[in-house]
Length: 396
Image (cartoon, rainbow, N blue to C red; front, side, top):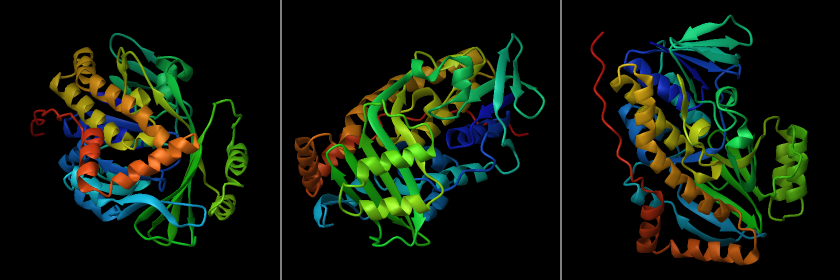
């Protein structure tokens, strides 16, 4: 069976890997001209880590990742205000935890496909038409093709979701923040293996020193959602407005941003849908149930969902209605719970009031007590989900 997967981020290539392993013929379509590299550093753990283990990727991910030693918050002079050792995170996850640039994770997953999966870079889906026997897909540049199924793995702003399920505003829940990220070279100071954050009420900027003398920066700021940030120039102006007078290293960080050509900027939102499938078209990852960038688990959840969707299509022997139903049965309650936790967690990045910031810092102080850290992190971060087991494909 032929499956078209829109999106060559993390969910799409993971899905393609498992479908190819089960004997499906998978094609990826990605509107970017090449695989995207770089990106902000993410924490990777949980069931997504287990999926990566089953794909044989964990040695590579540990090599590419970083063993962060400390999460530290500082004041305007750069003096430590609060924080905790990252060892408590590794303990809570029983060692199945790493921090890795999102682009490095995506590249590792994509490279695992080898020559088994065709990828159409620099291409977009322009129309999707279903009938009883399959799906006719029109593209912007190449002739139309026919597939048995189409899967939208194209993120928060999914074009497949827009074409088949409706406009994004029907499903988006804005969480009241904007986020931005970029990388630059030769920034000083550097604090090796320390995630350094500076927070004022309603805003935070953080930096992390990466290999090859590069530094990653992440901005988070509270928003009512009415700002007109329509393009890159407007995003940069918005960040200057928010952080020019914020103190600490903000002016130097903004100057580095202005010299940098690439800036990621977006709203912090979730996607909430009553169903993740419509006929022969289904959604996976952020396209179906984005928990928000600040949730810290988007990549792992995307890999988990992709593994389950591929496994159910294989187990159902192409009965897509049954496969899509079982896929949702396995994951809906789990992902809905993660979304609820993410709403609470988002405010911890940039509490809107001085009191909220004080409470957040005091909570971080408590993490120096191992029993306290273990109790909180086990309840908040450990996945209460068991990956299903699926039969291997017959030898071919």
